[in-house]
Length: 332
Image (tube, rainbow, N blue to C red; front, side, top):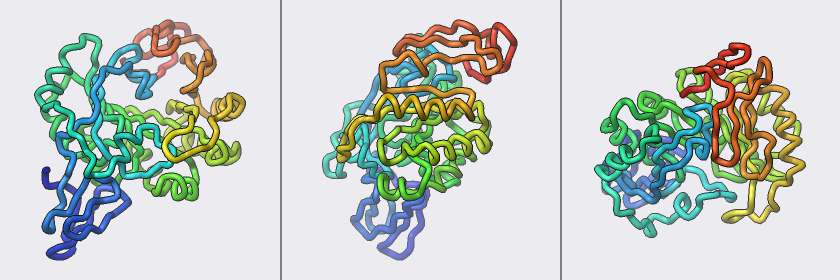
């Protein structure tokens, strides 16, 4: 274990974690909401420092990032735990694991650094699979060791206080943030969190100039109300920019949620609403040609063609549309 950052001692025995808005107050021996940060004799420790649950080379589109080095791959690693408790969690086997059940993957830091160089199509390292916020100490440690030519990516729920987020912004190049819904009731009832801190994180990431894409998992009866959904995409357009890519992901029953899978009709309805306000909207987790390709917002020229994770750049000249010259801000 490593002594954690972002906490204060309240007494000889109690500490308060200041990493995320859960603000856990822990007595000696207690572990936080995230199952990853523990009070040991009046000091807060990261229980998952250097503990890796998963490692794989993924298409960058799988993160999903569609406007960040399209067609390339990225070495992706995960750890354990999460600072939200989504009852529909897609990776619950690593993110919702009780502390005592952690099973360390036999992988050293040197192994990770070596793996980065083994794939010529690799652009860098992604912190993903479980919630990277709660292993911020290892992220800050690893990113100092990685060659500057490699990109660092974070796939996150954005539920973090602004000071640690500022520290992450100094080392992370691109974010995909899961904006799970657009009401506090949704966050409270389904995740154990709240909406406002995520909105603040999104605005801070955008203002930093780092690459940002959003994912919204569509849960029937929970966050698929067309009016509330439209409020969300209008907020995205006004606060983050209409050129912010939004990925609408189809839900399938997982973990503790028995809600039926999202219908194709609902996905298409929300897709059409989002297209009225945002330049780049994509559909994920469903077999459909619609919502896969990237088109120029100005002249509708096809810029990038996708079939599954097979990606071909068809209409881009560097970052510009090859037909009308529109500046797309697509990186890579």
